Length: 305
Image (tube, rainbow, N blue to C red):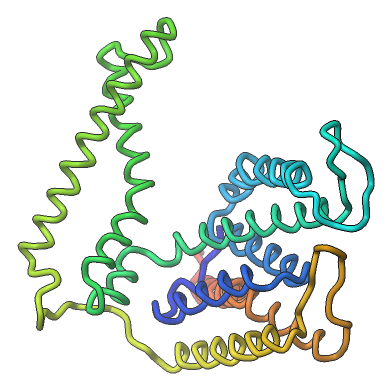
């Protein structure tokens, strides 16, 4: 896992980026746009999580991709190009297969972007962005993002404690294992409820949500952040205009087809690639800069003689 420079940008920049890239990924139906978004999402996820991203993709996303691709042609029969007939008598069309592939890749692309969002947009950034506007909502969002990893870590602690007491869920018959699993789940649920109450009381005692309350924030909008905001707004505005004018239109039913390829479409593809690859480019550039600095420092140190 390399150094991620994009995480150090202002929360407004990172939030706007993910809103644009996830929202436009859902709006753009062109397969080229989806392919670019998927490649950049996988690349950035690998940059953030290292081999954990590969394991997550192989273990969860790949089976989900195959299942979605197979399910759609079975239930959707729209299209004019009939390839065969199913045992039920419904036609199997080329358009339904292609759309199933598109929907499957769209699903894993959005999931991958959200996994990156969960790492970059930490709870303190969400509280900073929405704390004054909607204090309750920002607190709920920050707790929800923190809940899953914290919940899983606590479950492992409880399971280890129960194992030391001779209540391992991997021993005994099915009924015994189920009983031990239910006991762990009950303990975990009680802990989660108590932790939520303690968090609420702690935030209330600190005056969270009161009018006029001030809070320390380490985030400052500097020149680098302003340039990134300007770039995001320009890219987002041009791409939204291209969608509205139909330059990136592509339909899957009843026939496959889209807008004619021309210079405008090539320009929009390039702009979309620049937008999706922005955090990955920043991270690679930041990592190269730090490696250069470290090598320079290592050369400047006196050698042991």
